Image (cartoon, rainbow, N blue to C red; front, side, top):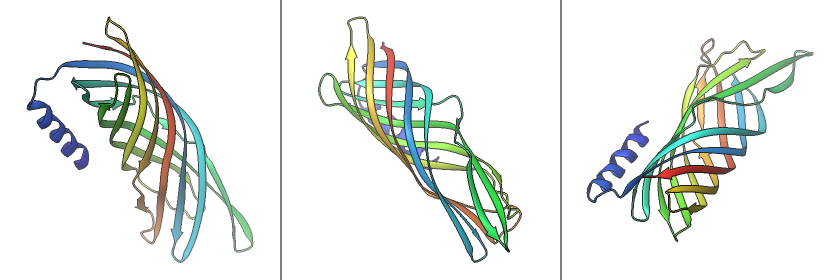
Length: 209
């Protein structure tokens, strides 16, 4: 959250030095592939699982524009649900099953966009998302929810008409910071989410004012 506040304040200061030319409002549809590694450490034992998944989502955005620059905020109104990951382990001669499923809620980003040409643009910013863990672990551990921060970089193509309507096609790369949680039932046990990253494609429609 601190990074996002600093980002917004810095961007607002920059735009306050000049007259903002206009406002863009729009909605987007995205689809992508993400990968992450989950690790649980129980005392001296460690179990890891790599997982990849496809996901699609809708979002809305608002941008302040000035010449070839814009600052914006984008919000995903719904939750992104991961697939359930199942891991079987041997425990004293028997096989135990661990399952883990994660919901990503309240995902939003703040960004700066630069029009390289009249149509081609690049975009970069920071993101925050709430991570809700839904686990059923044979260790008996339970982990609370957490928030993650990350970065996004993108390149896209923007088509406009004389009425201010626009269509964008974009590809982007997202990467989130690693996070480690301590079990609420046993402080010796920890779970880590590492290497959460993904690529996605996006189509946006909107209007300039």
